[in-house]
Length: 371
Image (cartoon, rainbow, N blue to C red):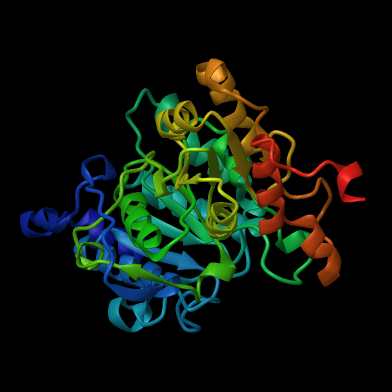
């Protein structure tokens, strides 16, 4: 670590080197057209590769990111290309290497800290919240902390309560943090690039089950200058009868639900939040004012969740437009069960979203009639 600080900062950066550094996310463009297919894993890997190539201050650190090429192979090939000074294997001590990462960011480097799962970020919560998130405010903006905390978040499959929790609402409650939740390969590439270029700490919540999923990407998305604006949601599917908000893996479930609803004459608008903090309240409220109904979907616990914040925003800004109570779909209010059948019951399913949308549209079948 001292070596990379001396080489990349202590010795000073050349003017040519500075010219290669990308702008922050505030000037990023937004694209959406589709062409070839790319997995989320490859999208993340290519984004890391391009940002490390463009900016010598960017480096990756975490457990098994180097020699093993990442627990989920997100960092494949990066150690060979950039060497051990910029792809650092760490001991199994989240508190230790997260603190080192925050210190390096204080010094002007741009660390990307990988957690093997965000459940393990709890070991480093003091560094993330008290050191990274609060330093800019406490220093009267004299200290920026350009660091990215990334890794899989939420449920995978059969890994139990201590490896399955969604931390989106936890981190989104903290001033000073930005919280991003990619769904597609376009999201993964564009948002990770934006996170690395941002001058402030970003929590980047991936999903293990999405790593191997392929999505269409356009030539613009594959361009090395591509990134997405932080704080801007994407309307994945337009509709006129009901709004469905979701993030990460639940976007796919919401789109499946919208397909089912369309066959029954209900036109659902699906919003991929992309950014949990800042939250794109304008896009959400504009949609609700058009459809007059809302279903929020998330994997996390229902109490104090992302859906609850969205409901509050709509009640405060668009209450007069609602034609039905807001429906919240969330994980069960229990630690994640290990048994596969109970795990499925503890997580939102496509049919849960369909039923909620029908209730909001007053299209559900009364229990007495279905008996």
